[in-house]
Length: 340
Image (cartoon, rainbow, N blue to C red):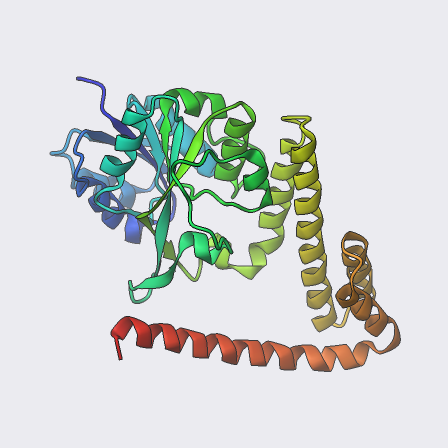
């Protein structure tokens, strides 16, 4: 069997309701020279049944193992991959039909480029409708990517997030050391930073070539997991500081870590205040002030010292106003989508 152009790597764990749609999005690729390796990352009989429906397509293979986390699942798929280019695809997300063709065209015509990133549509699990904003816009990126621009480590550290599904040369995947790491939930970020620090050439296309599913029970949308996510994010950035001694990188890391720790401390302060734990709320506000000596955390520290009861009463009101504003924004998006 000849080497396929693409190896698409997918780890399935508790995503049985979405897996068939994910596989269908790969089958629909206009470039047909690919292999899809699905890892049943938790020994689910239902995952096996779903993949068996595609038994007539030799490009689709299944690996079964006990759950080893996302990193362990993706790396198990990568160990069996034979393609020139690798692409990670979560088992509840989708590829647009032109993903393989468009990204392969860039890599084929630019041998020095190691990775081609993309943008993606966001769509709600409930109604399946694409949002107006793209993935990059949803994470606060206001500039359009340019495939002629080589992404820098400083840019990524500063917040120029690369969508996790990207076309990666097999050789660059080895340089990035795969997905397994001690920073769960940010495996892609950690790998991209390792690649950049090692000198890999990463570009990003200004095209939405995937669809990212927004689920109410997903890790990224569950407030209960915010601490675990932020802790992994912080560790990934701290580890990046050991990859290079370039002054501009260290400065960007310091700025980003201060911002991350400030936001984390302010969130913990709010949560403690609503739980009537004034001491913890004040301590977290002081941590926030140490990271960013500005009026906002200073006012919170003063309020928690002099009149914590007032802050407790004000905060729920602000939360209700924010909830109403968010509801109005959602209604406006639906009107825009319907054309009315």
